[in-house]
Length: 141
Image (cartoon, rainbow, N blue to C red):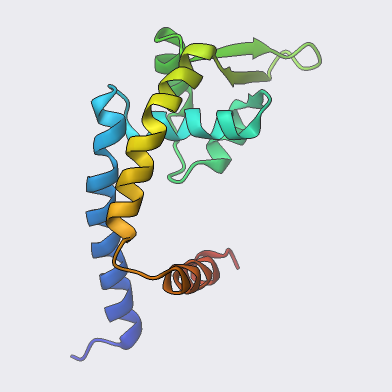
């Protein structure tokens, strides 16, 4: 049985993603964060205003059915806070705390350095092309 070019490409993509993830996950781990916890904090910081828990889940790199547990753990550490909605009792918004922003700021340079290290084999033009191709492949139907 022969392997199609598409299968070769997918296998290469999966291998590269696994390798890159192993390298990049070291930075959050050094701060006692899982990659998913780091992603939640990154999303909240980038939003600039509180977000509902389900919106956070929808924006995550790996969608998490256990988003409530992730939020619980981050709240216990004082890295985010929950804000009950005044309009809908079922909705709870979250925002990153100053301690969470400080922790993210401490990780920014090591994350940037890890990004540069793993992507240094590609030129700026190749990185742009790679992003465009991955966006096209990853776009929902």
